[in-house]
Image 1 (tube, helix red, strand yellow):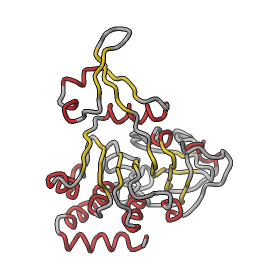
Image 2 (image 1 turned 120 degrees about the horizontal axis):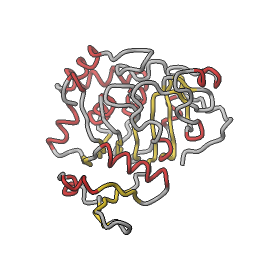
Image 3 (image 1 turned 180 degrees about the horizontal axis):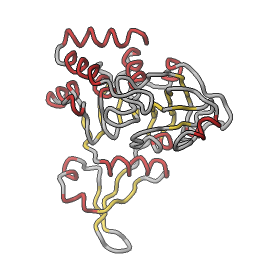
Length: 276
């Protein structure tokens, strides 16, 4: 899944890279809440009119909400979707209340186990049965309780979740797809290992030596990356440490626009104009 030549130059344009995304694909979005999110890629997907996507994200933020608002998403798998201090994610909240979004309830554990199972090419991974104390087995019939063949203890089988596409924003990358990721990593180092195609937008393209000299060095191997795009500010208005902070005012503007159909149409048209 997603493996390419180690020494191939993987630089391309965002439009060319997103040509790999098809209607109905399962697309994982990197980052966490309002930190290092692939917002430019999400806007480009909205501009391209992709439909019926299944979005997978540990915690969804503005990038996930705008795709829902642009009618690109049929299903969402996440353990949280919101705008943190700004409040609820408007489109997500409305679509869930209206029953027009298929929501798969996840926890951080179930989603990470599902991705790791896909990476390991096994049908499921077992987790401790403590999760059965919650209601998640009632809303997730695909999670199966079973007796451990060694101890007899109750375990829960979490099905593998292979991904069609993973899209991440990196602090820096080299020509070969090796990436440095600063700040909250969430599931970013693992999503590409479960994906057939991995697209990375980066604040800057640097040499491999420069990349290795950064704090943390290479945190995502180019072996699992298929496309790299030089895209400074590709996570705005979300943050990308140490290059730029969260633009709270811009997120507030987004939330205000999303609350009104006319304002939302104007916001989306303006935000996607560069990608049309």
